[in-house]
Structure formats: C-alpha cells, structure tokens
Length: 94
Image 1 (cartoon, helix red, strand yellow):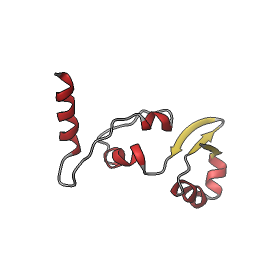
Image 2: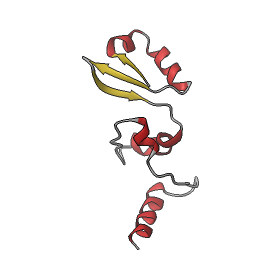
Image 3: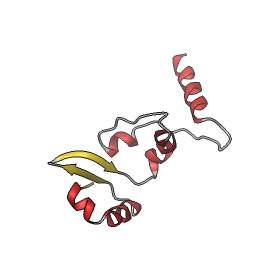
Image 4: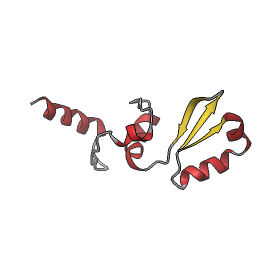
C-alpha cells in the first residue's frame, strides 16, 4: 500500500486512479493522517461497493486486510443482497 499527500493527489488524480486500476491501494493523507483509502474494486470491496455507494451499509475497516476478512456471499443478479445477508444471519443463530 502506498501513501500520498492530498497535495500530491491533487496534482494528478488521474495518475492515482490509474495506479488503483492496476491493483494498487493508495492511502491519501493530510498532515500525516490518513483521510481516504483508494481501493481497486475487486475482491471484498467489490462485493460491497454498490451497497456502500447507496448508503445502505458502511464499512469500518482500517486496512485492506480487514476487508479481506469480510464474509463472501454469492449473490445472483436477480436476488437481494440484503435478503441473503439476513438469511445467513438467521442460519448462524441456530
């Protein structure tokens, strides 16, 4: 994972997004504090990104390794991800 300052990011955001498209994860910092993480939309985040974008869920992961530990669900195109998640939770209660 690389780290860039807001200033460096603002000079050439297209280059940063190109790096992310190539699979790199980039932390954006301001005064040494991480304020954003740019992740490629593959793996764990790719499964959750539509729900995050709609504001239906929030991910509170501190590293990409945390994201990799999130459960994986196969969601058919015509199914509701929420219904599958709730069904899985019901099964865990038994």
